[in-house]
Image (cartoon, rainbow, N blue to C red; front, side, top):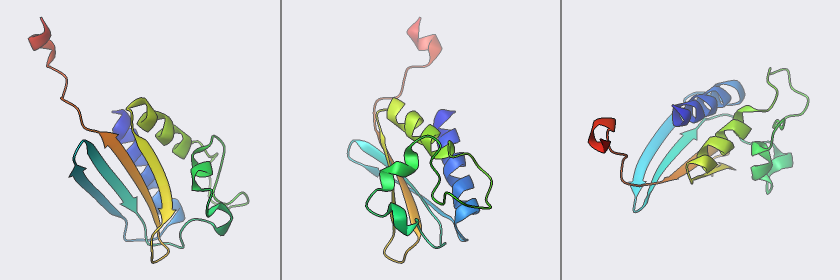
Length: 118
């Protein structure tokens, strides 16, 4: 459920601050699952370039003065959830200027079903 919240927050941000189409990707790498959410908007604010991790701080917004509603907790929640799962979340501008968020989660053996643990 928590990873679902991460994806919902990233998709909401992409619709608020980006432009369609929004592309969601997933790939398995040795030892990791990599999820990406990319919009086709103007990209991350120039003031954050080189400091993209600040987007994941509590009460931080890409544009301090913005008509877009929000308090700056969505990405902080994403970071907390991903970190709790032993993963990493990053943000960057793609080559064409679009914003892209990447979640990397470690791959592990799935937990046993409750009835198998008895």
